[in-house]
Length: 213
Image (cartoon, rainbow, N blue to C red; front, side, top):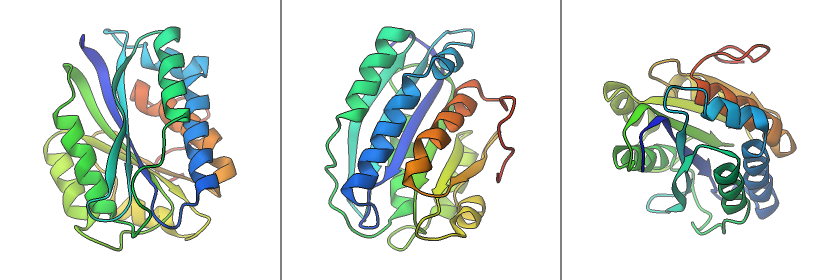
């Protein structure tokens, strides 16, 4: 794969609290965001005119799946193909506990093996619950920060209204990191659209919330 400006691992919670309709809203919302011209413009706005993305699904300890492997996003054709792959990906990890730290660890391992030289490495964590199994997220976040990797979070608040606080304290870290939230799964598409624009450019976009918003 040719060099990219950013390698972005999308790590989505598919634990027992996420039903199949909610998973479809996450996958469909992410696909819709990738079809948005603003997201493509953000992905190609750097000096290398490209980003690399992958999709990781995770739930309990040992339950993770690289649903969509590393894909170079450099134009409308690759964006459409990536959107199709994410929209149609099966939910393979078994529903179970929320091993948030384990999911983050799997995402960092994927970023360590990205098949392209990347100017920035970013882990994008989305979920609706606190860590409750396996390795805690805080130490994993610290490893990411030490390696120069940015970890951002999108907390879905339908199950735990104060989840954003957990993400801010235990999940996010690194250069330019931020946490944001959405009220429920029907709001995910709009939230992931704003999040991707921000992550792919590495800067605040006009009208977007600041960290913790």
